[in-house]
Length: 601
Image (cartoon, rainbow, N blue to C red):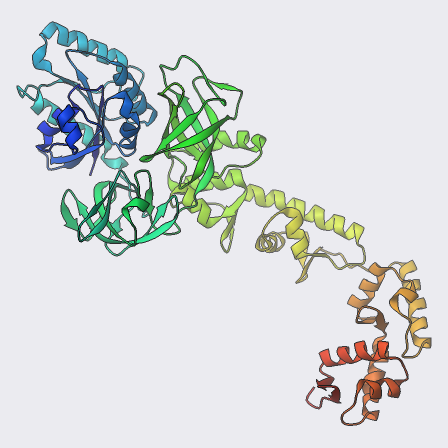
């Protein structure tokens, strides 16, 4: 269901025109009716002659209520731009046109209202002025229709023009299966509870669905749905909808909140954006201004950080630091308003909801993302992965509105771009080679250490090693293919001396520190099972341990540490670690202060 949004200067007849087209008064508040002035958003609907049902969002035109106007602009498909024939182009006409242009609204109809108050000559002048103002904007070439709801002049022509405009935007209405609704109203109905309204985008919503509200990540459930005052078990995307919520208070879901499915989004407080300045701006944007970001139906303070240079006049990339995390995706449109100037100064699109941290990396990513900002979700996910190198599939999906990267290396919940995989594979080979050089006696670098040095998840290390012809997976470690870790001649000689020392010392072998052996060589000897380490201080030859195991038969069926010590003729410092080793090997079994030789080992 297409959404038609009004725009134009205050008191130029927007609400009157909507009332004439729909038979419904969009002004909801007594104050609006008393003052004859639209203060907040108004809503109405009608069915066109061709059977198409359309929604209207009527926005205030007064500059004091520009925030409310922007809250109603996030889902406009067709603009109904209103200019009064007796006043012509006015300041808010220019600002509203800037908003529509910056939001990329390309379908619209211009209604020159109060046509019954001017003669043909003045109407021609006003029409020429409007054409001139539209030139160079997204609404350039839009049909201009003189109308008067009072005399009915031009109303049929206006309806026909709206039908044409609505047909033009039909293919753009998409369903990617991820419902998203920016709340523009929140209220309570006696007996029903909390109700929120907005334009449903990107996916359907059904009664019984679990939903999540951002910011705040509050959970609730859909009790019921209405669209245009009709109950529906399910509402398709791109419809105005009222959602009755269970488990949420009205005060918890204010205008500006976003309703979606749980876990569909990864909120962010930093976003890379492409900004285009408003055409009437007479001074460039700088990092020093105080700005508000208008996105969806909400407004939030933001800090601006330009990516290229210290001033922006025209268009360019920037980083926005948000006051709180918001659920954003690539392609989202926004408006930027400067507090000091009290005016819309720019707008644009989100390029990356989770940008790189280094400014040099950000600059490199801009062109890739800008080219894909309007592309399909899968291509957006692919572009995001290309600039990030690696990321979780869940975040790539959230940031692209449901996309899955193509040409990626996927391991479990993670994705790695081909380019990043090639680079990381080369880094892995270099890292493992360096580790071998520095630790020639070790079989390879532990996988956890390699993952830490590459700053990747351990699962990615498994993928890199499996796809590399130069690396070997040895279980807990990674080695360069062909690496053996053999002892040098000098080390073999040292091993011979150590072996002789252990053989001649009996079972009361010297402590490790007394042997004077290099720790790396000792680790290598243990790995090759030339010696067995017992506790922190002892090493034995395997045949010495075999002798101890055989001689356990000399002990009683149940024996103490002292019995063991006396039988083998060494101190308690040898007996305790040896018995703990034998327990671990299931040769002996401890039962309180006693032990026995296991018969089931």
